[in-house]
Length: 464
Image (cartoon, rainbow, N blue to C red; front, side, top):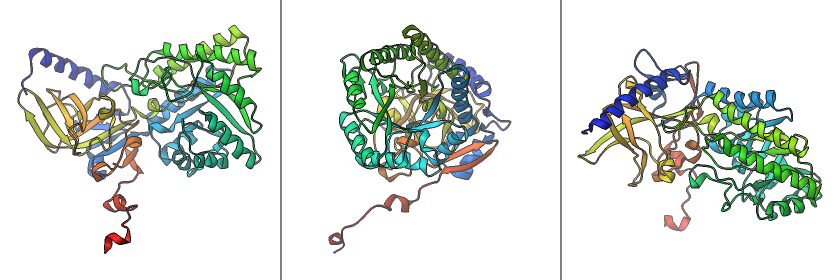
């Protein structure tokens, strides 16, 4: 590939910045003496040799550090109390719930499958919050049978169904109502969830939120504990969270005055941004504490203004806990250069294990893990192996000149990769390993061809 002087200068500057990032940004992600990338003290070349590629690798220390950062800040700086709920949709497996249990935080789940997974490791049901804009009846019944701590109502039908099922069981279920505060966060339209046109929540602006609150308060087997909102994902502007809190507290005060409702729980959701490329802010546990501190300050100020008791504060970080903790390792296969157009590096993964580029053009940074000290020298696109022209994992990635067989590491793939993976083209969903102090163990085992056909069935008449 022929590089212009401007692009060559950019790549030189980028390589210096990237090397400093690897060496200094995260303690357990570095380049070792062999010039190989390490995660959690484990050589990525060895990880690929032992577990194969593609492979999701997670740094356990980073996951725990992020959980602790949120938990400790909430405990130390918010007198009203509350709970950190890990957002399962980012990455759900038994091991992540076991870590959350050990770190004494709660979880939120959005399906019966996520709830079942958590229950398999003995997670305390009273520290589980269930979400969803269209929870199925069997999912709600399962949640009630498990005695989950909170269920977030997002429809009148749901309130009726919960009331009926709770009555059958002779129980009272604690609930929140999902509210749409109308805050437009600066993020991709597909991950904005609190704009006026959203499938989630009841609008404050048009009075819908107040109406559903009055409706739920009449239910004898539901106990309305408060309200929930979530303004979107991958948000870096602290002010967005503060504006949302401001609007929510205005609403809480209105509910006290109009419905005589004391809001005991205010769940402000998640959405804290993480680093993918140098277009993003570099994030650290301390940086994420700052988001929470700003949110806490706003809530305290507004409660004082309205003479409201401090509600318990719940937050739901997911991506910011596991996103940067994860990398994906690939082996470079075919290399195709189209003169004066583009260079493709084909990898053994693709949209079946990372659909985010295909969905909304997500950007990534990558490095050759077996030659991690080499400086970038060209722009390439990472082509997946699926039978789709749009199967691209990353475009305009800065890399050294790669060879077939090189080991590629794509960064910040811990969230919404395994959880969104599929068996498209009957490819395997990659396994995942948890790495700590140089040791790695499976947390998701590899699939086999037998797994791909396990649930297939052939009607008898087709065998004739």
